[in-house]
Length: 354
Length: 177
Image (tube, rainbow over all chains, first blue to last red):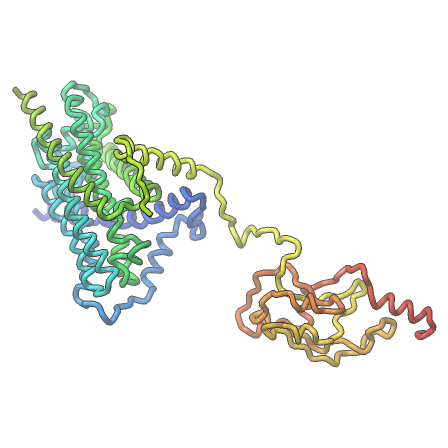
């Protein structure tokens, strides 16, 4: 029992601290990528090539005046940044980020309802933003909060429905089972990444690919990234829900956004891109040596980094959706398509078993 | 006026071509040569005729050209120039013997680099040069005095050489030893 608690605490520390580091460096990557896309150089003054820029940013957030406007609702104003940050950190708890090191499984909590837990926690993320909009007690944050509540709730439905086919195919809600299935039968989004090819994986490919497409778009909406950054939309709402925030409280919203991106990217890696597996012999079964365990973690992080790069890249590529277009896309396109996808997958699975 | 919106085809409404086009454009720009100039390390070449900070100049013999007529002080729109007139007597060989500034100050914090002083100067003694970023830690540091202005201005090689001609003429007519 003691051993279990000690190892879990150790795992929490070893996950959360690097996660915060990744958040800091995701900001740097965002700034660099945006600069390169716009023919600029980007931050390059702090450290060689700007590599220490996150440190400078962090200190700046820390040293700025933490200003609380007179007209805000104080309790919620203080509560909102924390609520925006915490869900993304909690989501990481169920993500299997590697196979095993020694006898320890590389996941903080291997819940048998992993995905339900994730969706439950991700839904909490909306409270941070809505509360921030409400607490600020002024018009722009208020509009941002209203927009985010409608947007995140509607896209959560599409997101939830898009993963149902995945679990119908696999037959388990435990995320380590999802990875075990993908290790044998090919990644759900890319079935050819598989050690032993079977016809049945290709049979289901169109449905899993559609699931992946809906999930990734919903993930963009869920993390308030462009083209769906309506709660924030600097050009219309000043800063959206965090207009009235400064200093470290603003920093928490900022970090929360990137932590949410990392969390949702990790979900996508686990659900559709095979987690820590690679279709090379030895790389798709749980590690027997510690070195292999580390290699598996590296594979997971590599896939995560590529997805993060996609998130960042898209932001500098697509213009923002109009609000009615966003709602239209969510309710009149994705939800029916996701529903049809569930039915179609069920039919295919039924015919296959019959 | 009603703007007729073009009906989009199914392929266009699918939004995928726009996404692919976006990837292409951003990828092209990603590897393009960057346009940023690394300012303090590399600087742009100042074009001729640029109006930077005004400095005083000397003639090729090393004599201060300014005769402290105070026209620049008078014309200066932000009143950045202050001249204290009775300066030390100049060399007797040249014409403007009786006039030189005792002190000549330009407050660079007030100066708007308009160039009126250069335009109005009858002696061509003050020029707007190429310096555009003047820095200092106190306000006092940015009030440039005569020595500093002359040092920064250097020697002006002009073709007219008004006083030398006048001196030569005077000697010719026996007005001057």
